[in-house]
Image 1 (cartoon, rainbow, N blue to C red):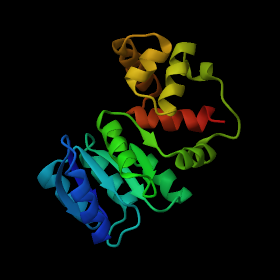
Image 2 (cartoon, rainbow, N blue to C red):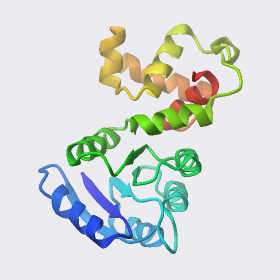
Image 3 (cartoon, rainbow, N blue to C red):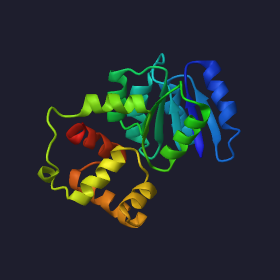
Length: 209
């Protein structure tokens, strides 16, 4: 996994680099101190996952996420910040970030989150998930049938929003992973969405409690 670390704090940036390079499946391909440098690094290095701070000079992590996703959709972005700021959380997710976690988490948790995101899943720290539900839920829960969503598709949509991987969903619903992938493809097509992050946001906005 090729990782790019973006943080304006040199101590955090370099410390994360040293710690992540101790993991056998990680290669830190570079570091950047703001969003503009991150965008340039994407052009040169093509990282798999970006560990992105939010509040940075020149270009913040939210704007950088938007620009990187527009040009490099395959790059996964995990927001890592000290701030649980509702506005930043909402905009970062809308811009396509696959995860949003706080720096107060342990290194093991950060490493696990990077792996989860790299595998194509979403990850949101519990405090952030609660905030997302509060921000994105509609004034009234909508009927899945109004979106032509079947009961099985709705169950899978909910589990995606809960952060479960395809394997975990398959085990919980007693389905094959291939069947789960087919359901997800159908949901993306039916709802005209791009990826599972948008599916999670869709669930929170329309059905979250």
